[in-house]
View 1 (cartoon, rainbow, N blue to C red):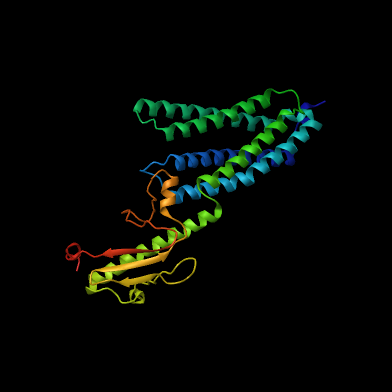
View 2: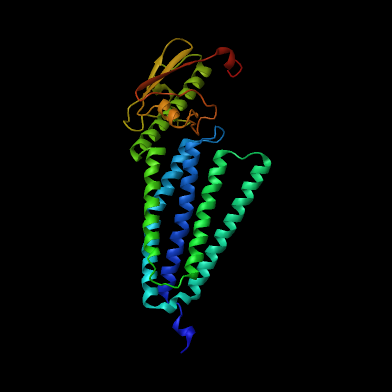
Length: 311
């Protein structure tokens, strides 16, 4: 009998194997990314911590995990079922190529990960954040290498270990997703934070426009509508959730207030992230926009000496 004909790949084999390995890579990358972001949140770096980008990365990684891992487990089950009925399919060239390619990628990842660890150690820059991130990559890459090495060597097609691994993998993914609710907040809490971020962004835009108005006319506008400009196209922003206008109060010739109603507290955020400043990516000067989960007003005073050369 011609063995080449017996183990020839079919379109179904190509589809299942490629889908299986693609979802596997997606899941591994997302899992590593998710835990790296968790580490960044639990041990924030004052020089690079940004809640918004971290939360976005967590949401994306979680979304990929929730979809990719079930597909990977399902396609693995289909492939194992096919192998149980056709033992010779273990010798498919496509299967072996993908397996050895995965072993190659995981081995390279381990080597690079260890190189970076040693380099950071010799440079004296080994922090707890970096150590934990290196450890996550090392453990995941090591687990991948160990699993596929075992898969190549195993003789028992109907191994019960695969079912155990499927349940373990599902449990780890579930725990990882749930952990995100405690580290970055529930979807509802994250949505409220994003609304508050937009409120702060809007208030800063209004503040800049009011100061520019004062520079040009040496007086504050009596109403925010006076800031609108058909030539520049500026339109006064409103609350992103309620659609109501922000409160604007002229205190005296040099001071004014901007008020908004927030849904979250920056103090609560700081306590979660060990006092790290709640960085707003659109606020390069890190002005004071701390607020409570209530109506909060920000008083701003223009220094004439600071702006006298701009007029």
